[in-house]
Image (tube, rainbow, N blue to C red):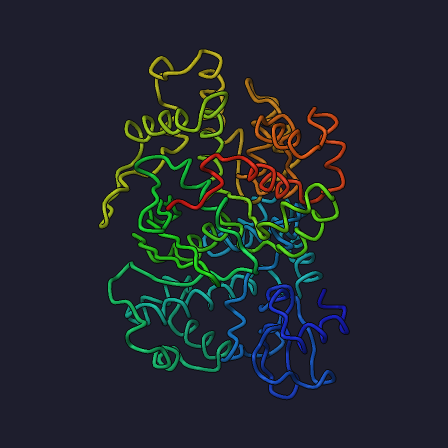
Length: 489
């Protein structure tokens, strides 16, 4: 979009927050870059230039605006709705792969050469993987500076910088303030003092309907791993350097996030995975406008716009839980999962009580005696085959997964039919066009609305909803009185 100058100028002049994260405005006279909704008086059009990423602005010598804080914009929805190389690379960079494994590690995960990845990222985003990761490190550093009392040296290494001097130079270059000056601007009461405990705000594009989002996560919560408490969804997180516990609370204009991390180097990854689970980078206006073109769906969208797809923080965990939920009730699936957690999950300490374990890793589940599993023999085979392939690396589920290739791999496993594959594609892989025409709740809703109720006919009708059929599923599910559709009281 950043190449459409007139459209960008109109968005800036109207301070349209819907475009935050889609592009960034750089002001040639002040050498500052802003989000489109920046509250200051818009510059003259001839003084504006536009970039596709914060990293590109920084590489061109612009610094972040102190008023609108463009580094805290929602992420571009492009990376969650596309499955090409650039989108998969951006999802991996957000997950911290470049900081942990370098550009060669990024390339190895994607199956391309480093030169090809750098060329494509430069062409589309104006910055290579190192620059994009650097911009992300700067954002992480700012969060730690403003929300903790950690020494600056500790913050530098927790944010992923290799040296304190690099950390200082980057913060000064990006924010035009030293790390100490950044901290001095924050009211003392806003800075938490407990090491490892962070409170932050996760922005999103309005509208956001929290009912089905948090309702689904709470209704399917696995005891010991997840819970709904005092208006917040809480769960444990398995992270690259350790573990964490997060509490997410829906607020009118943001999601309040409280994080406890055993290793602060996991902050970027934890934020990225929570945003992905809550689908916070979606563009609800574009999605809802497309679905409203169907006269039978339009009343559902108008009644409660802004529904998101409840996703996951761990793709392998969700795949296991999808198998446990085959042909059983939500309560039965929770019971099966809770037994596995108690027997094979890794214990964690929760200062608030309630959460006790990490969900078992594929390696731990692969060592389970199949005879001990309280499920039919055919599903037992499905379960053991899945965890075995996840454990030995034959099957990999991650943010970088190619949706089509992964679907084909899953369909080749025993006991994996279209419903299981599509629900994994929708909620674990993040495919916004995944559709569940054989789902009982979808067929019941279709019949009540006057839509075709047979899978083939409904799939044909749903072609008009592309590429947002996963969101149409949320609206159709919402016609039922199941607890997944309601924010817990």
